[in-house]
Image (tube, rainbow, N blue to C red; front, side, top):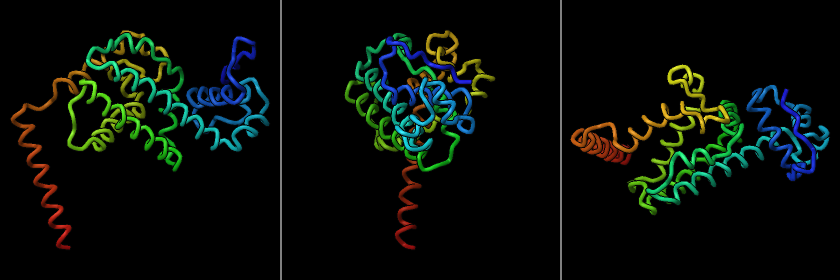
Length: 228
């Protein structure tokens, strides 16, 4: 069961926000198929009718969840990148408050629907924004194709969420654990990431050769396409 939220005065969220958060928790814990209006209502401490009143349908509720998760990630990453090269990485991780949102994403991404395509598009657009901010603050190198870079990096990150069980099996890190950011095991995941992104993988000689080959292949494809 999804855990019921207290309706005490200390919880100043609106009923609509409690329903949204309850749905995120239910999807994170049980998956999309097992998330019903009744379970969400129990988690939020409201009636099932109020769920439909605010969101119209379960799909409408999930879209609202998607928007909230994407906005939370965008705000967190933008604030981190805005600090530039002096970012306290571990401090930023400790301050992250994603709760069940990462597990929600891992479950949600399996759903091949237009709504999930929209969610991915939003995440990529947000990534393009904070990558551009990273260039401005001196944290990141500029790119010849900023959008393509944002797409590839987003796909890698989201792919790690979809395959999170294998990542846990191989590296012992559960990205969907709400407490992973303060768990020392996260360093076994972060170390290779920053090694690859910060120091690169290819030698400069091979990287230069590879870039030239890709550029030439693209030009050949354009010529062939123009002749067809």
